[in-house]
Image (cartoon, rainbow, N blue to C red; front, side):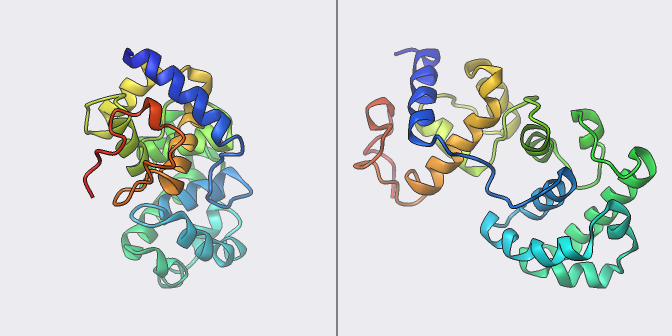
Length: 213
């Protein structure tokens, strides 16, 4: 089976296995998703979702984050880890949103990645989920791990992995493909103890039963 053939088969099977797959960060607006994604660095979505309700009640606009004292913002996001750096980035990001974009989250990659604390992965999350714009493929730890185990790429850096996946996966499915791999990585193909015996992709996976524990 060639890589394009495997990618097509994997995509079809993941779509059937996880028809309800979606971004598991809780948000109600593009700004909330942007902030939640910044907070998710080195932190689980579950923990971020425990922190953001109080944060989003306190800060409803980009200007609110700028006006909020740094110490109060740090206290609100403390549980997500690296809170000082994240608070600094959030304040700088929201200052730029207020000054350059009228407080709105921009809808293009260049403008988003020009914001403090926003890399390509975060921009892809926001564009794909808040705006339905497939600019790229989100490559997190789950996507990195599974794309290698499934034999889709031998690349090891997020940028190179993304370029490979963008060639293998139809553009219309870029955002969903990330969700499917992330859901599978959380529910079946975990890092330390993958459930190869019960895996829906076992017949397609060259690593099935051979992943080091």
